Image 1 (cartoon, helix red, strand yellow):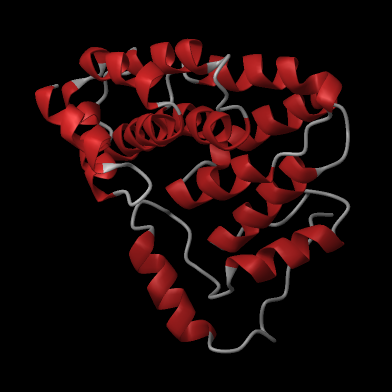
Image 2 (cartoon, rainbow, N blue to C red):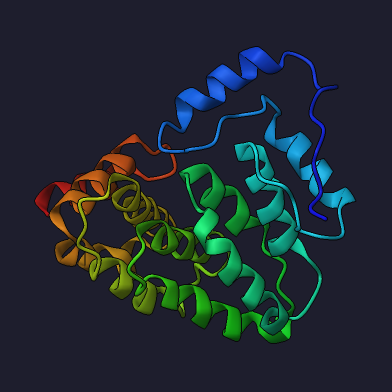
Length: 215
């Protein structure tokens, strides 16, 4: 039987629910009004991701349980695949992906898997791949392959465009010289958003912000 999580004891739920709902208008599920740190605590107390889905928090907790489970990545893949239809909001992809537990010996397998998600048809599945790569696998040796995938994205989906821009801006923050040639290859909408993120960043020097003006 699926686990039905009781959120009734958490304070100030009505106000929090209204705020969270305003952040995720794309979600078909309402918010229970529970903060993400509390969702992480709940997830840590559960052994199974078999959760009854009524609220967006149920999906968040389910994703955290799946991604953070201490097991081999090959065992995790079928569970992630079964979870993909629950990617109903940016909040789900952006919380589940960075929750990933991955053993050192599984990192190449995990990297290849999340990179392959960018080739899928579903926009939010692509976003999950991008966010997880950014949080777990954004390294200099992987950079060219990852940015090549980002440059292959052409979509009108706003949340996917933002993910591509977020990845590119983060890469530029860490590896500006290696990243700058890829700006020319980006979809125009992603490029504009990435440049704006770079301009807004306090972690990028004035010199490197200035260099973006010529692109």
